[in-house]
Image (cartoon, rainbow, N blue to C red; front, side):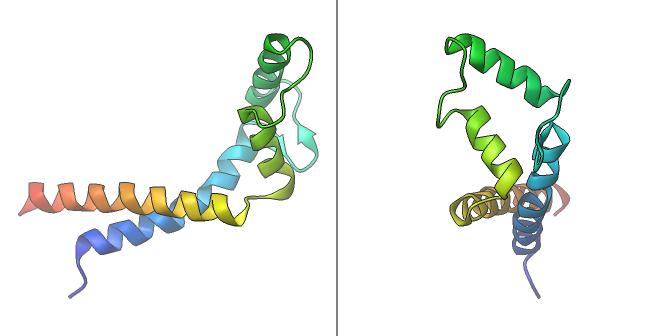
Length: 100
């Protein structure tokens, strides 16, 4: 029998990789650029004000915009899968301890 913790870890990894691009797009970082009036536009505005008129290269806004236009890099996909598997595995372990 496959461990429930292994199953929840796998589900966490898959869901994190599949849902992150949707979440990035939902807040306004899209292939066409930042959507006016979105959370992304508020973030960009705040970053530009804080940096004297421009968004700094390597900032969270710049990284999210890159993911929004070009998709996730291999490294980002791996990191998301790892984080999702960890969270899913811990959640599965906790549930098995509470139920059993």
